[in-house]
Length: 404
Image (cartoon, rainbow, N blue to C red):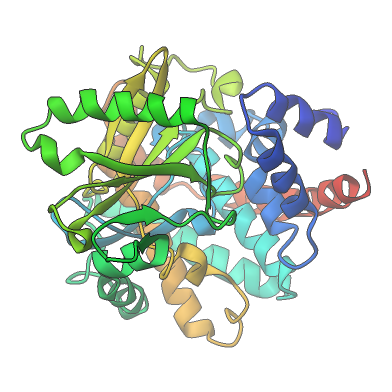
């Protein structure tokens, strides 16, 4: 494994990227908190995982697939697509690259072990849940066909989550993140310093100029008329990166307004460790959006890569936090083991469908190669053992970081 000077490695990585200093301090504080960690620490240090990951043995031999790069249990979620239907899928592709499928699975299984230990659930339960993921992934790959999880196809444990998301309509989302003026004729974004921060006039003008240009190229320019903008606070690993919440005209009434998410795109933290040739993307946003579109069954609403000056950004619909992905947290996984096992099976299916759906594209393995690999057994043992061992390393690293 790499040198274990954890604080220096974390600071070197984060300071190599343009981040808001105050939000970076907030990120470090969250990583040191005692309630949810070391899981939050694990979420926020994707780069450490790949700095340490060996590429020998099955980590090197596995077929190449399009991976999201930062797969953990809270990077699955419900979202509304362009067709206004709700789906359950992998929902974070900032780190996405072409890499062995075992990289994706190893990080997901490690997250299970880290999370279960965080909430004092025994390793026996963690291993049982991880085995459910592996079994479902293998079975789904060998079937060779990608499906999706929507309200008409998902198992009950996922349907329950989807129904909660469906119930959160656009007006409720607006009420959650915006406020009306006194005569109730105009909305503005709530500046609560928890989910949104005020920005400078210079930043506002930059976004305003972009949106005017962007809207002029859309079939319905009025829909994208910018009404307000603020800095968005979200995520763990990307906290502090330039990101905005946009309030746009939408359907020309305060209750018809829409909220969008605009996030600056940076290189994948996996890039230094991918020895396999990657496509020549137009930008980092193009990489993220292209891989997301080929991996998800139905992409999230408004998803597209855009450019502001020399920087690229991902534009997408803002999703409600009233039904967040934290429904996948583990506090009660041992209390409702049957439901938890069903959930893990669903995660294994979703990952397999993603790999099948994006197979045979720009260097990724074809379906027959994936099926042949899935039928082997040694890699599953090695990935499981690595996840168990590395979860303990995460715990040690977290403790060292908390003491630094």
